[in-house]
Length: 505
Image 1 (tube, rainbow, N blue to C red):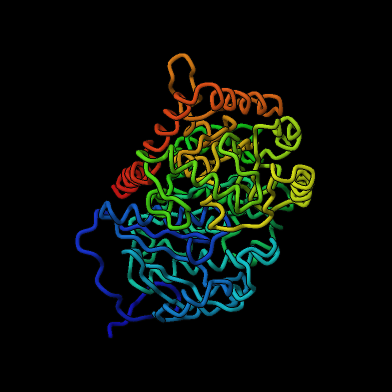
Image 2: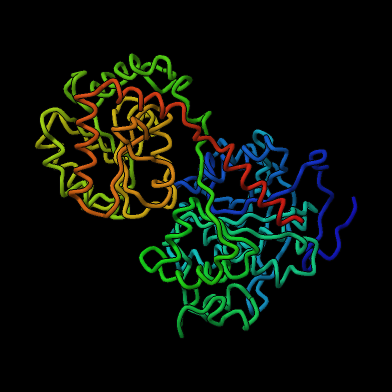
C-alpha cells in the first residue's frame, strides 16, 4: 500500500482505483441531498440528474454527500467502506472523525461522509444552530476525502449554502494540497436560504482566518456572518438555475439581501436552466399510469388517465370537465395566496381542481375546506405521494405554477413532458421555459402572467379555459408541441461542460 503524503494534517490512506480512461474533465459535486438517497426538493433532483447527463459527455463525476441516518437501509446496505481519518475543524483545534462510504450507480461514484455526531439526527435539516456546524464540517471534509482518495477533480461544483464554504477552504486551508489545484463553481438553487449565524459561532466552527470575516466576504452586519455570501465571493464562477433568475437576484426584490454582492460579482455569474430526468419522467414508459402514452397517442390516452385520476380521487367522472392540477410545497413562495384569492372563480361548474402537497397549515386547511364544500369537484391530497404526482401530471389538463419567485422550477417541465399545459407566472425559470400562447400565430407552450396579482392569474386561467373549451384543435396542437419540447438535461449539461473546460484551462 502506498502511503499518501501532505494531503491534510495527519490524513493518510490507501490508493484509489484507476479513474475512467481519458475523461474530458473530472468534476466533484458537493451538496446536501441527492435523489434517490435523500431528497427534500429540486436540489436533490439536480444532484442526481446532472451528473448522469455529464457521464454521457465523458466527464468523470463523483458526488459527495452526508451519510444521514434517514437514508434508507436499502441504499446504506450497498455502501463500501473506503477509509477514515481524523480531521481538525474548529478554531481551538478540535478534531472529528471522517469516514468514507462509497457506492456506484450508472457510472457515477457516490461518496458518503460518515460522522454520527453530525448526521445521525434524522432529517437533513434540523435548524440553523445545529446545521451551521454540520455543514462547516461537511464542506471541509468533502475536500479532505478527495485528497485522501487521491482523486483530484478539475472542478468542485458546490450546491447551495450547505456547500458554500468549500471555495473558501479550497483557497485557504487546502490551497497548498493536491485539491488546491481545482477550480470552484457555486450554484444557487434558492437564494432565500443562506446559512446566517453569529460571527463568533462561524469563526469557531470553521477555523478560518479572521480576515475573511469582514464585509467583502462573510460579514453581514456587526454581529452576523453569512456562509453563502463568503462562498459566492471566493468561488471561481457562480451559476444559478435559469437566466432570468440570474438577473432577478441582482435586484432588491429577489436578491434576499445579497443583490449588491451579486451585482459586484456579476462578471462571474450566469444562469443555466435545469432539465429533468426524461427516463424517470417518461409518459410512454411510466408504470404508475393507468395508460402510458407518447405524443402519437396522447389525446386518447390522456382521457383514460383523466378518468382514472377522477375515480381515484373521488371526483365526478366526466371527460368534458377541465382538470387543473397543482403539485407544490404549500407556501407563500409558490403563489398560493393568489390561488386562495380566486378559488371561488376557479370552480365554475366545468372545472375540477386537484392539489397535492404539504406545507403551511394556512394553505393545507384552506384546500381541505374547499374540498369539503366542493365534494366531487375538488380534491386536496395533503401529503406527498410520488405515484399520485405522476398520475396528476398525466391526468390533469393544465398545471398551475403561479410562484412569487421560482429559480427554475421542475413541475412545469414535467407537465410539458406529459402533455399538460403549464399556467405560470413570468419569473425565474418559469419565464425561461414557458412561452405564452399566441392565438394569432398559434405558437407558445403555455399561459403566463407577469405581475404578482390574483386577477392576472385568473385571466391566465380563463384564457386557458377558453382555448380548451372553444378551440380544442389548437389546444391539442399545444399539447403535442409541449411533449416534443426538449426538457432533458442534455443541453444544460453541455453548457456546464463548456464552463468546466473554460475553468480547467
